[in-house]
Image (cartoon, rainbow, N blue to C red; front, side, top):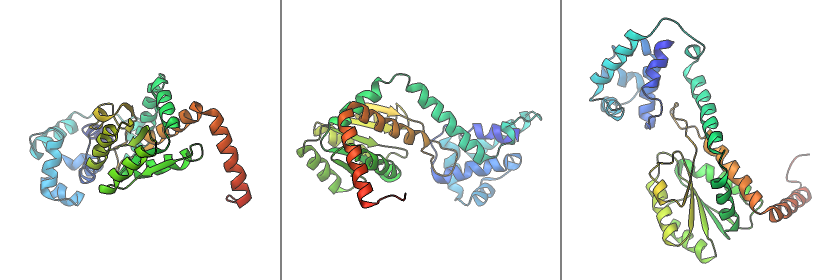
Length: 279
């Protein structure tokens, strides 16, 4: 519906918590009635607390929920009757299509390949290579680490916080590490930020994959590579950061082609001998 599309634009690009996203989804799904819901009714509909609704409104820049509701009423009143293809899409379709737009923006930034190529050189040269990813970014670090280990002799995935994280950074530096790759995605764990600062204090070059060039961790990175995170569902979509991780893997391979070829051939021979994969 046209009204749903207009209401959705209120939240587009906003950094919201999972509870706040449930509220946003309820407003979009019930756009025609949303302008007349009390904060209590909306809280019950979204299965959140009433104060959560108030915090949601202020997070969007409104004075409170009544102010947000007035804005929704204006959107409902001004919505034209005509519909187009986008208006007929449901919220899940719009979320997925928004990821296509994030990929397009990433592709545009890659017109300048210098930052990625520089990152590839730094990562390929570091022995060992620590790869940091905490909380939501842990699977991204694991994914990168799995494939990087096929072309790099010593990849160390750092996916757990606590005091041991600083120990592992010191051990990597003592072992000869010269750079660290960090995936730091919303909601930006404090421990990841602290680890970046620790890595820089140890003398490591820090390459950070995050969602924006102005994310809270960018100031502590020697090289920031940004890929937008989808925020239209309850939990983030990491399509563009994952694509960027694959681009970085390619850059590592390009930076050390001889090593890459020999290690890949050795892996294939080992995998065939051990029958790792189905024929």
